[in-house]
Length: 543
Image (cartoon, rainbow, N blue to C red; front, top):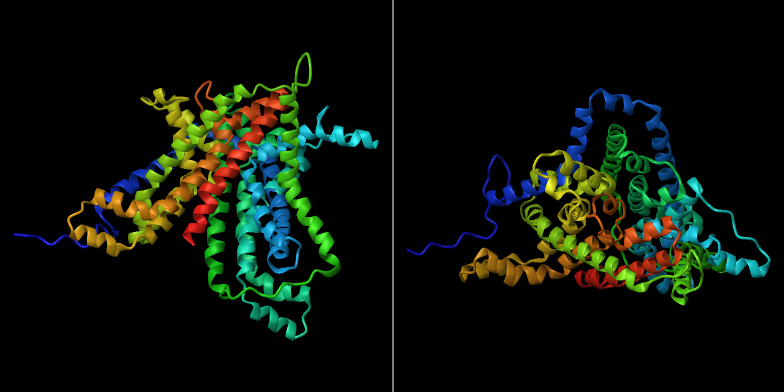
């Protein structure tokens, strides 16, 4: 007797959950793996007992915690102002070349923050670009910028796109009728922005600002270069010599990061119902006499976040290729020596991206096809791992490999490094995978199953081709993040496994500025190309 195939999407209910039991088993295993590093961090603090409690209430905690919060608040406020201003100028004014500015303004995201910080320090180093430009004009080299202000300047320059992108998207979609009605009632440009535009854009700016806050809280490279003491630098310094302090600091850092991430999600969801629906593009505001200052502001923002660092790095790289210098040579560079770091960077990034896409795909099916609170809880576990700094994830997995019986073979191995990467960046692939799963027409699956196609065949022949653009975009985000990751690589990479990020870091510390410049230019160039090929182009295909 022939039996009709089961309907696609039929679900089994076990204890109130929706979805196939096998899918839930896979999803729970994946979620457990994502929760392992944070769980280990909590367990280590508990097992330390009184030692941890003594540390948590000591002065050693207060100073780096205050420094971290002060820097995060200052950078967040500055990026909110810069990002919102640029979004308004590029989307709603007659700013010259506004179309080009819309493409250029987000580009500082391709520049790792520690690379921008290294470029700032290299610019004012002996023989640097500042000396070459200012000395012939009779000016001296600027004083070395370090500490809070150096960290603040670099982080604002490279992180304002986190605010600019959501603000620009919202401003560009505002219904023009609101502004026209305001002007008809006698409100000027500033009053219209304050009373009409800002309430509609505020939620997008808040979401971007909270992301910046989270980014700064977890920042390691820039603050370490600038000599500014934060929670992350203290965790790194004390990881070997004072484990209780390192884990206590790490727990505080994780709590702060997770709290900010939860606040961001709550703020974003709460504000959706308050937004007016989008409309056709509104009329442009004439800048008049403010056109020149507005253009200068855009030039300064993009110049400090992208053009100036790249120019400085290219300058040192060019000097290295020219073979200038003698004796203890700080300016020459052996291009062939960069082959290994480039290859290692590509291998680690590609493997991580592929593993992340495969790992999160079952979760994407669960949350998209079946939903429910239980599936949402699993999603939250995975998403929360992104809020935890990569430094803490790497610290946890390295100590696990050392302390947990049977895991010693993973210590400082490539699989351990990839695991840390996937846990930290996996949610970037998950969000895109959910979009991909949602784009698959389930009627095609039903037709294929009626024709006798098995589950694996349907996945490979029907679903995978339809999901490919979204999966490629998600994998591209993971790949780019992996290429730029520094602290996790420093802690968990195999001995002798040097990436472009660690090459840049070590070259800057050793004073080999030409080597640092060339490696940085290569990293930025590869990141820019991959951003276009894997992220921007695929995003356009999904619209």
